[in-house]
Amino acid sequence: MANIFDYMKWRDISLENVEFNEVDNLILSRLSYLPFDGVIGKDEEITLKEAYERTKILGTTGRTLQAEDIDLYPVLAKSIRFGKCKVTNFINKIEPEAEKQFSAITVILPNDTIYVSFRGTDNTIIGWKEDFNMSFSDIVPSQLDSVEYLDEVAKKYKNKLRVGGHSKGGNLAVYAGVFCNDETKKQIIEIYNNDGPGFLDKVIESEEYKEMLNKVHTYIPQTSVIGRLLKHKEKTTIVKSTETGIMQHDLYSWQVMGDKFVRAKQTDYSDFIDSTITNWLKEVSPKQREEVIDTWFEILNSTNVKTVNELSSKKIRNVTAMIRTYSNLSAETKKIMTKTLMALLRAGKDNIAIGKPKDNKEIDKI
Image (cartoon, rainbow, N blue to C red; front, side, top):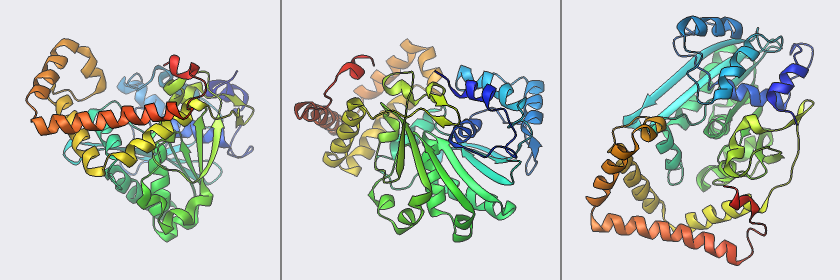
């Protein structure tokens, strides 16, 4: 089996000589997760190789979300295929008051096209809160930022555009491509959603979404969870992963053969999760979802931590703070939280009753 690291060894050929493909998309979608903070000046264009050298000088090459990112950065920087690509327009905003986590980078490719890469959820509590907000809100702040960002890049460069991202970044790529201005839409070649969630009805049923649907392609692993959330109507390719269950969200586990992903079949487990969440959303109103999610994150915020890593670093103190906050909630709030949790459990039970999943092996592995 081969992944994107093996692909880079085999396919290290200039984009001027060998055209862009779906695996290149996955690699560039991960580029937005790399530590470019303090590396690229405003409106500056530097090669990926130069960016890596600056990152080494700053000593921030290890500030990544996954250990594999630390290895990927130098591989790309030193490669023929991506090393001379120019990176620019890096932005990274965390705004707790607006419940927004947004980051993106623009990659100018040697074949005169541009790839706009939107980062998915990082390890901040605010980033996770914004994700959960998608279950009740038609629009979240980072989606609005993604549209503004894409329009600015399109106006500045006039090049043909590919837009993509992984996880929430995939959702942002689709949203930006759908709701950008008409001139930007003319520049878009393809929109890539790599295991990112879909949308609520307001977006899915909009004319703007239907207009751009032929340019959107979603890739999800066979037991996808994140990529099956909410609604999708675009073309979808099922990718083989060496992980199981929700861990297949890790793009480093996606399997590659030549310049394509290894195709796979959707599993009963993924269908089970999709049906359970869909049924839960039908039973619990958007207002109830908002109240419960706000309450859970109020409990998390009582710990005063900013990242998921901090949450687990002092478990006893943090758990004590959360229990204390929960105990102080009103009886009505506790009742709503219990009601929505029971609805979720009931939706799962109903799906099992009608025969989903047929094979419980994937569930057992999680």
